Length: 147
Length: 147
DNA sequence: CATAATTTAATTGTAAACAATTATTGTAAC
DNA sequence: GTTACAATAATTGTTTACAATTAAATTATG
Image 1: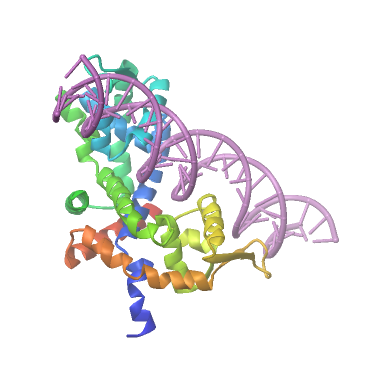
Image 2: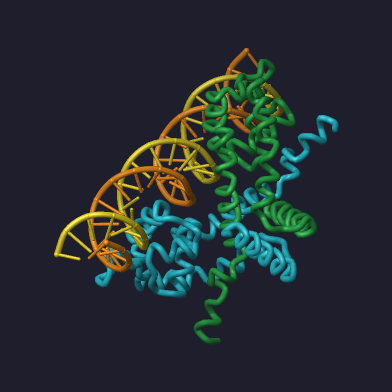
């Protein structure tokens, strides 16, 4: 086998992971100007997505939904609390649990976030069919990684 | 329009970006045990992928290839230098350029990295056809983000 | 009941990522 | 040739991310 063939598997262009990594990173960067207006980072934004729906959650559940651990979430939630978008208090039933509840200000922010998805959609050139296909494949990979 | 419909676009499950973000993150995490053996982080690994091929580059070029800026690369390259995998020196022709060159130890590492791609491949349940499709779509998105 | 095991969040330490700025070098304009 | 502009990397400050550990509360086991 030639030198080049032997090492082909280590070429950047033959990695499936790299475009995934780069794409995620660049998309998060594209969000920035839109999220800046809401005073949110991307990770804070996806945390708010959950809370806009559920109104209440806890660190463990958020971590499961977002694939994040308490080392990431604890400072992030303190930040969101300091901005007045959420409140944090221990559960009375089980004091190990930290209950995260969205505030009125947090709910108000939802209105201002309404146009973010469509603005982002315009940055990503994928038709509906392709987007659905990509979506399915990504969740398939995500599921296969869990096991 | 009902309350639920109005805010559907802000549901986590309707975001294409989130599985991308989560998937990239989880795959990088999956790399960790394999890369630990090489004393490399994921970002250091993809930097080495370039250098194993090209032997030499500079900060600007690496940044373009990897979608990273000097704020990320400068400390990373210093780290790789301290591990003995690369050397850093200013170009004589243009002292603004920092030339990054792989060392003998850096090249030796390539042998030990040879089985990383196949090991990672086993973690991701995608057949060849699907993987190629995903690959194309990701680069399509990446390209559309540039413009 | 008392001790062990488990669960949950917080903390610590390291690396990544990027925006904004700075410092230096090189190039262009006059 | 000097001054303005551009290019390049480094620095600074903030946030993200995670592994490993710690602390506290709860549950299970003897």
